[in-house]
Length: 461
Ligand SMILES: Cc1cc2nc3c(=O)[nH]c(=O)nc-3n(C[C@H](O)[C@H](O)[C@H](O)COP(=O)(O)OP(=O)(O)OC[C@H]3O[C@@H](n4cnc5c(N)ncnc54)[C@H](O)[C@@H]3O)c2cc1C
Image 1: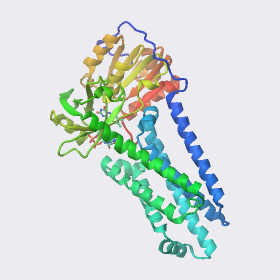
Image 2: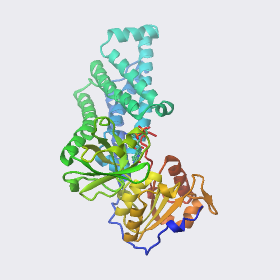
Image 3: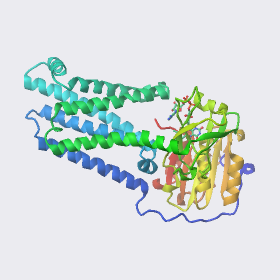
Image 4: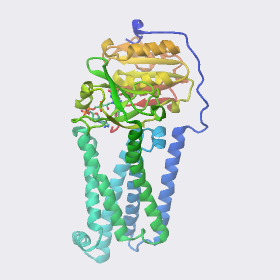
């Protein structure tokens, strides 16, 4: 079925509202450029400090030392990427930052292994010693080496559990708990750096530089992951005011709190929600806002995917909520064109429904579901569409649904339903398979990259 289900379709008069003035530099480009300049400047500084300290006569030792310094820098950068700093998160999105964190993590692993191997082989050469003997001597006689070896072992462990095959087999919480060992590795690695001196102790400037690197990295994590969430929750004091079933496996949770008009949340963003019940307080799950924040209430709508999401149905009114966020770049901040196409798959309707409230210009919504019963929030979607002159197409059928123009979210079908698609921003949210297939169709249709925005409901992919 490539044509939309006409019974489920509402077509009303189009309105044209211009989006507000756009910044000269796109927010995502500005953040990316800022971050890369920051890294480039630090790589240059570390290299300069290394040469200022005077490399060793032994090439292996020199390479090992330089790799160690780059490894320390990569570790600090890793922390910055997961610090959840609002400025970066709103511009780049937690999903993108998490992917960069993942790749930096693997580079870090190789850099530190290089450091370890070159240093041991280098000193074995200088001391005219066997490699194993040299390693044992270093660990037992030199201060700070054992700490470095433990740090490396912890990073290897975290790297192993983060590899795709292991990650898929571990519960999110187990993987996350093991991941926290990285902080112990950071502290051990830093104390190794202080104990051994080298480039670190070569000059007061080098010392000041490295202290600044670690203070900024650890300070960012502390600010973004501890201070800010605590301060926001103390201020807003969220609690559940209603739990409304939307279908047999989807439920909406309404929350209220103090000063919600001052919470900097936008349609399309999500929070990590922790409901403070006796049996679930330890579990935080990401859910998008399913309505644009109105300054009085927040709402999430969740499908039962596992025990945590299924338990939301039995939440009691009055339950206290600890919410970390708002997070995510799936917002109108990145809108480039006056008009938009919103594509939702299943429960991916949640941020799309919220965006429909906030987005300016003419909007077409494509809502892909398996059966009409799965189309949760449809009545309010239609109400909103009618109020603001948007078009909603519900596309229902099995996942391999195709019609005269090919797959229902294939390039030809999209072009038929939205002839001016390349002149719109396209926001896509749905299961990973549907999202990837839709993004392929958009590439085929040559919709410019900067107009395509996706939320995959997965941070660890
Ligand atoms: C940015 C984002 C927004 C989302 N918005 C919605 C929404 O609006 N409505 C909805 O129904 N679903 C949403 N999800 C999916 C939802 O988070 C998962 O279905 C839910 O967390 C499953 O948890 P569980 O305990 O029920 O199941 P489990 O079996 O414990 O978890 C299933 C899988 O969910 C993922 N998950 C669980 N906890 C977390 C976490 N803290 N961080 C990242 N991933 C986690 C993991 O991949 C895990 O393997 C969203 C996901 C993300 C990443």
